[in-house]
Image (cartoon, rainbow, N blue to C red; front, top):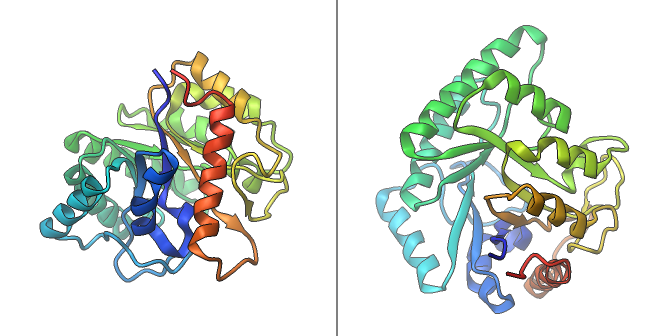
Length: 279
């Protein structure tokens, strides 16, 4: 079977999830990674939220009808909220998980946490297990995202997985973010190490420069060998979605929707050439 290829709503920048739903089918994509945004919290792109942590049942049904009307399916929900070490963040994360379950997804992607001191680590492990229990109750898998903190590198991710030991806590790896958060990483080695623990994989590109926000269309950065990524995951019988993330380039602004759409289309072409869509 061909891989499940989704696209993150972040790939449409300030036009957000609404634009993604309206335009993905035009370039042959059927799956969307949908963010459940935090009510009242500013977003990176300033987009209008499609759904937030305050969503009512009516709002959830509206989203479900909207995606159905445009021939799109939801592959996962991004539920970033803040540091799960803190109870206030966990409360919002749990609410977002409830909404994700109502939306019918099985995967949610969220922060693994940050520590100010090593003494906080046991509290973080307990917090993540608490979120895992909530995920289990709702029939979800919580995927720890590659972000600043304990999951900024594949080594940190692996160490955390060994400590958490929860059946509903897995990993989300990001091919381009690896270069953003780490100096001179070796993508192939990192991916091979974490592959057994992955339930979601973000496909993003990069120039390979540390701490430089440069995430162009896939195949236009040069640091990521997408064919090798696919070979590794195919050999691991990867059971979950790949999600295109084209998060733009530092300093750019006021781009028309057509540019975002073309970047996603170019990314799809790259993945086609690398075999992702071949059955």
